[in-house]
Amino acid sequence: MVGTPHALPRWRADASLILRLALPLILTNFAYVSLTTLDIVFLGALEPTDLAAGGLAIALFSQFRAMSNGLVTGIGNLAAEAAVRGDERTIATLVPAGLVLGSAASALFIAVAALLERPLAWLGQDRSVAAGAVQFLTIAAPGLLPCAWFETLRHFTSGLKLPGPLLGITLASIALSAAMNYGLALGHWGLPKLGLLGVACTTAVVPLFSFAALASVAKRHPKLRGRVSFAPWQTTREALASVWRLGVPIAGTYGSEAGFFSVLTLLIGTLGVHALAAQTVVNQVVYIVFMISTGISYSVSIHISEAWCQGDAARARRLGYTGLGLGLAVMVAVALPYLAIPSSIIGLFMHGGAEAHPLALELAVGGLTIAAMLQLFDCGQAIGNGLLRGAGDTAAPFKLSLLGYWCIGLPIAYLLGVGLHLGVYGVWAGLTLGLAATAALMLWAFELRLGRLKYPAPS
Image 1 (spheres, rainbow, N blue to C red):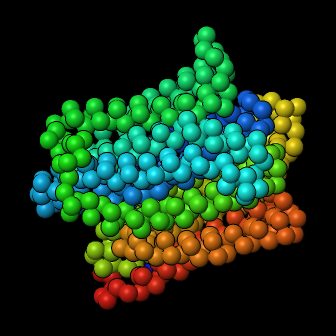
Image 2 (spheres, rainbow, N blue to C red; image 1 turned 180 degrees about the vertical axis):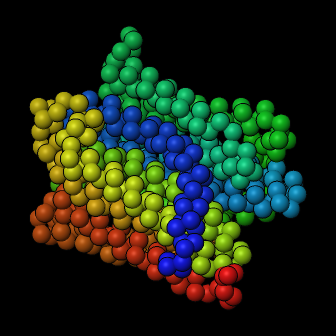
Image 3 (cartoon, rainbow, N blue to C red; image 1 turned 120 degrees about the vertical axis):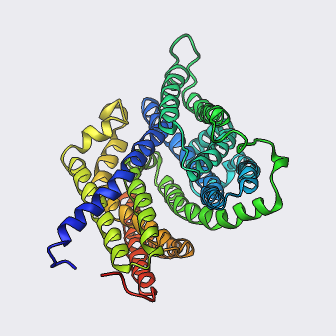
């Protein structure tokens, strides 16, 4: 109850619980997103066409990676459940199952990536941008395979509460990415200056290093030895079916969200090279900050799961809105620099400033004003997704994302950006409204879910 003397201590205790788990997750998320951020930073040192083509390719690569990741995400839940039962036989079949399904999905996406040049041109992309994006993807797409393998191991070890040095491996991957981009994209250390294709080479190679490092740790870990196998024939039909059954709706949710951003990126691409270059930078800034939202969302989800199992609707609601309040407070704090020093933030990605990217810089600086509001709703929908997962509902986020993103956000973005000729600002405004609608739907569904508890919370 808000008016009770215990309300403030409870809020503080809940906030402390949420942050204690969220902070290490956020740090790991920041390290992970630094990989794509480095790619964008090095692309920003090239021509606007290269930045636009690379940004489009990275958006599509992220779309494929998100769906492959979603397909194997359920391995963590399955590993945790099997560990509680003491079912070592099932545990031993999960990594091979994830490798099989993740490899199959990645192979499909690699084939699709090689065929995208004409479809991108048909969708109104500048032909030089479409050609550059497909060249980038042709080189980078094989990196989807080690990405899926790494995610399989990451979810498996996390499900057993033995995540190992994930942060350290990711930091080492960042160092490798920076070194390869510096050498191959910009032509230092006696290496050829490959520009856009140098960044693509980095995108393909770094995930292989990350997987190899985590696999080496897993094989040597005393509590993982014997539980991790890379032989596909050591899985079972039951394991494949379980991973598939959990993974498909998660992949659908991830794909819906990433697809919404990808389609809007394609829509912005029809507005010109400079608009697409601006979208690349603004989207990356928002994506970096989104890592805070995902860390809080995961933490809140875990704690709500505990309250849900106890039938404590009051505590589940309190945890949910405490987490939401924390997330929104951080988003407001981050938005202040967007409004105060937008040119300095954009300049971190566009090194040549107004002389090299005059129109793109102007559009991106204006876009940060919209992003200040956009990321509030982006945080709301991310945490709302976590609230529903914690309450045992994994189907609603997928359905609500389709409604909020595709039935509300996309039509408005097209109407404002193209129909009313507001350009990239109209598209960003539509994106903001789509995220706002999705956040509201998630919170509404969470309240409905809480109302289904049959017995009251303990006094």
